[in-house]
Length: 176
Ligand SMILES: CC(C)(COP(=O)(O)OP(=O)(O)OC[C@H]1O[C@@H](n2cnc3c(N)ncnc32)[C@H](O)[C@@H]1OP(=O)(O)O)[C@@H](O)C(=O)NCCC(=O)NCCS
Image (cartoon, rainbow, N blue to C red; front, side, top):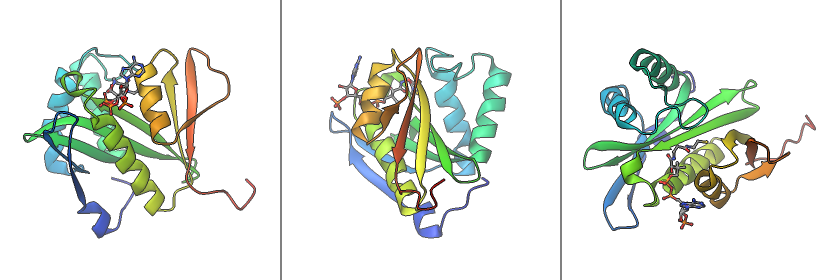
């Protein structure tokens, strides 16, 4: 991982209940989690659902996922020792902003996991005093837009086939 976090954040985990009362753990990805995370994406459907992700072809999916776990801050949602959700934050523009992505396995959606992962990522970014999180989302992806708005993202610019959403965590005092 290129971005480094202080140990107290790396070791933190959140324990919560999903909407049905089942236990969910949210914590940072560790190298040993790769097979379980890859398995979530192997089973994720529909493939190529959002901006061509997750890739359908096994070798492309592996190439993409290896890149994500090496380059981003990664949070996992774990239920019964299975990875059921994954959120990632990439540093872009030399830490001026961070790009966000999230996937929750289809069998575990609508239980509050995507919201919990996004809140945990927002809190982590806030604690690190990062300025802005950014993402693009398909305008028809109303569920994702709803989740992003719940955690504080706003649509900026035109609501086209894809929308850009940003979450400002810290005002830029340098006027840039
Ligand atoms: C988008 C995604 C991450 C959300 O995760 P999730 O665990 O299902 O989200 P939650 O259960 O926390 O919240 C879903 C919310 O959307 C609402 N919702 C469900 N279907 C909806 C719809 N068609 N339109 C609007 N809101 C909808 C739910 O009611 C819930 O809101 P509430 O808690 O205020 O009632 C997940 O559905 C997913 O992985 N989708 C496929 C990949 C994807 O689109 N990723 C985003 C790429 S930009």
